[in-house]
Image (cartoon, rainbow, N blue to C red; front, side, top):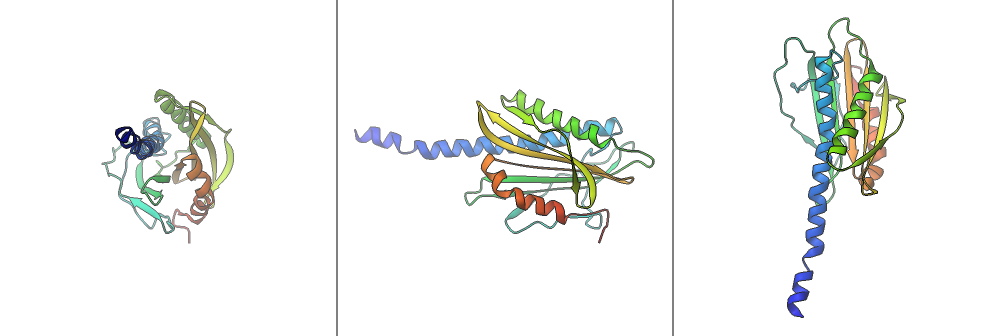
Length: 216
């Protein structure tokens, strides 16, 4: 019947819209899991981040390729007892419809003099937070063992998590932590199963192009 035909036509578009909205919420959750455990680390003097502070381009430089939309992140006052977060930058790569394919976020923190960061401990806590937060929202996640890596020229550790729902691969997220005697860095990039696979090489190029700690 004509009415039945009219009722059926909008559903594919509605379904795609709901999928896009769901994925936006998943991406938001992925980046949030990176922020909150690090705030806890600051209280424990592990300090990979606390809250946002103004960007200082002399300390870190990210060369965002064409097609990445840089987001302005809210700033917050630093507590006197906490290390200073100098940089927090995030960028999103969208498809032609404006849906996110991948999100990257980098944080740089100045360490308290004499403090030595347990990078592996920080990364394990980040990984745990990812798994716990996704589980609370009905998602399952499996993360790789921590492996050696580099963030620009700084030795780092990283892990990659695969997030599923009802057996369907919905998101992949990589977490990276690095530190030297003066500063610590955390990097996260996440995307849909297809978006991550398609943009992984570009994400690695961005990692390699980072200029940390005023290096030339």
